[in-house]
Length: 221
Image (cartoon, rainbow, N blue to C red; front, top):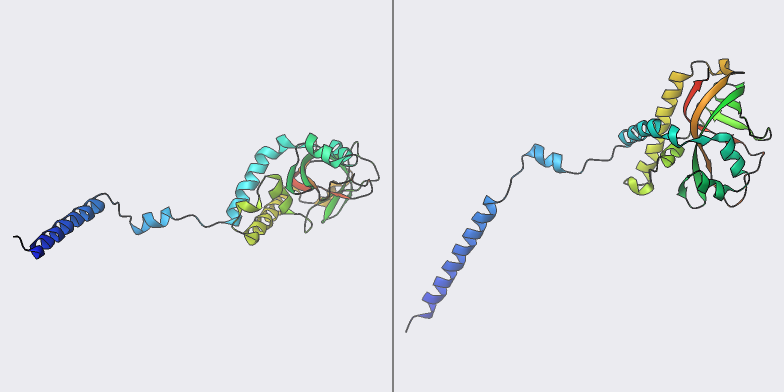
């Protein structure tokens, strides 16, 4: 009659042998990464400045083709904002809020280093149309117009930083294209930019100032 401990010992040896075979097979089929490869495989940290640069380049390429005449958009907003949003395919970054890409060739009636006041064909003289050039420039509207959403950033801070970085790019572009803002008084400028409505539940008052956040501004020939 065989001794029980020999049978148990044999079973353990077989099990150990199988384990060794399994480990060898796992090692043979495992690709070990170098430190450089491991670093490259990790998710890339979010870079607000890099993201803003990509959005700005995309806006320069795409926004002029999406922009509607400022006069048409303003008249629609002063009648029925929600219908205007649908007609002109506005972006909605929040409930009841819309951002419209617009373009116009308008006459500068007042000019300072801070902003230009525009006379836009088809827009009521009651409606002040202002083009900010410095501190009032708002990069978040361009961010929203390009469809960049809160979920596209790791958190609130980075989301805001994208708008801040876009503002820097816009200001640098304006500095390069407009050397002397005051010299533009009485002249025509061609503008591509965005406007926004925070509450589309009722028509926009004609006396309410409109800030056109600029993407590009150039003297019209």
